[in-house]
Length: 60
Image (cartoon, rainbow, N blue to C red):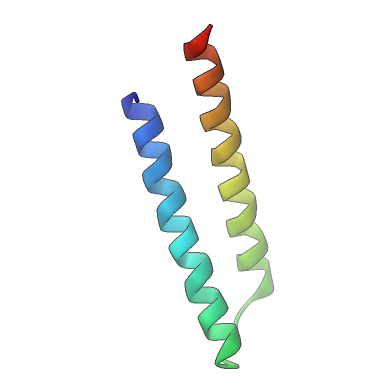
């Protein structure tokens, strides 16, 4: 695994922790901004796509 892939994995873990935090706030009926959840999911999907394309180019 190269450094780029490790960096992407770290960023994904940070974003997933943010999602868990948002869900906890939502379940506690605290005020949250729904667009933050959507944006975080979008960022995770984007990073996973980059990771997959990096792995694909490495394997070729």
